[in-house]
Amino acid sequence: MVHGVPAIAVPLVDRRLALEIEPADTPSGEEIAIETDAPLDGRAGRIARGMLAQVRERFAPASGPVTARLRSQIPIGSGLGSSAALAVALVRAYAPALEPLALARAANDLERLAHGTPSGIDAHTIALERPLRFAPGRAFEPLRVVRPLALAVAVLPRERSTAEQVAAVGALRASDPARLDRFLAESAAVLEEAARWFAAGGDEAPHTGGEAHERALGALFDRAHEALRAVGVSCPAQDALCRRMREAGALGAKLSGAGAGGATLALLPAHAPPAWGERVCAAAREAGARCAFVTRLGDA
Image (cartoon, rainbow, N blue to C red):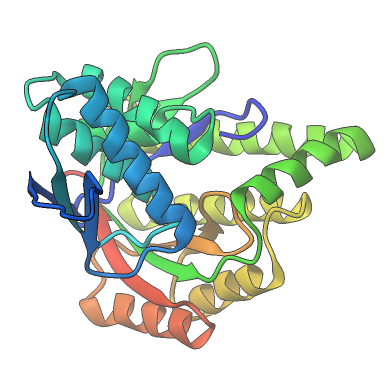
């Protein structure tokens, strides 16, 4: 959520983060060691160690040295909630009896190490494992996907950090408030319409055929991306990636997260053959994505 705009988040239920924690002998005197299946950059490593130290202080203050082994199918630092997934896994490891809402709140406390003042939508979506809508001053609202959905997810290298992106949008408030207000109004309208399609309670969803349903959702993806592009949150490489994925068969595409690279989500026909998604992912890789994969949502 940016500058008071409501947000929708969905869990990537077929992408997992695995965490193993065991006692360790650390002759060097270091109490925490982290082993990963892919290198963590300096900032990501500091965040992971800070989260582990904080969760141990809260739930196991008398515990000895540990080694944490982390394996993640979620690209790190890409706008797909990797830090929230790690936070949820850490809290589950040290406080397995917590009920889901308490788990989400504790994980969101850890996420402050990564994002300062997170909205909580990532931690709650991951802990509850269901789509959620969030608006300032309101409780998280569960959303039910009334028809299966398929997404192609592609990840570009980041051109600017999240902090730089947030600062740029904040500066726009001072330099061109009317432009930012148009963005906020359009984003809120798109998200409200999208929430109808994700259908809280089911009865609010428009009763159209499957193909029309998917085309309408794809158009909302495109509207959302255009609104973000208009205020400089996207970048030329991400705009080109969205275009290439549409040309390869996606019904719509938009950036996810802070933008300026990172994750892009493209809607696919839910019942298309696997080759369809493979074609869209191949186009994404040709356009510069460092990884691309297909994920599915909703009740089959």
